[in-house]
Image (cartoon, rainbow, N blue to C red; front, side):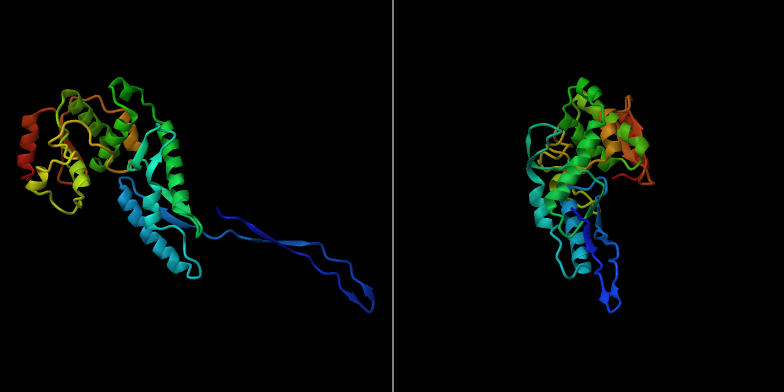
Length: 273
């Protein structure tokens, strides 16, 4: 952490032909702490994307601090985000911390390590998690980890806060009925398909456990780091009968319906192949 360095300069008493001069009172010079760098992790970033962001920002910091290399780096961040227990959550040792690395803006200094940054993210996650009432989710036989998985899917699916509880409602309803979720964001995560690329038919048939078109239930892990709004929606879904949704032409809002026929009609009318 930054330390404020204080240097005290004592004025020395001067002597001359006319006798001695009284010493001046001590003065204190405060050296301001070094200016921190900032790293921004948007909501919906994956652990891999955060590691890549660490690499980019650390390189920028190195360039600005030519005399001293920063300790933060991509390999260290990846090491610091695996094989850990999140104490505020449960006692399970996670292979990696996907979903637990809270998205926010963090400050770091030259001496900040990857472990320091990850600890700050986990502290932020725990503060957020403790603020959310999980009783409704528990009443539906969902574990906290289930809620985190749902929150991560909501984060990737919904762009408008008002729609997050609606997406959650669809997920809850389909889980209750034993339907597959059919959320392509999970497949993109499992097969590392960039959002700029279309999903091919062969990929839709891939048997990865992240293919929620083929496998009922939730994916094995969260698929991104959700923010507070998505976590709240995952714990408190809208009480609706919707089973389907599809993105509208504005690529921001969604059409929701409980009817398969209405859903298919919407797809046909809006150019879905």
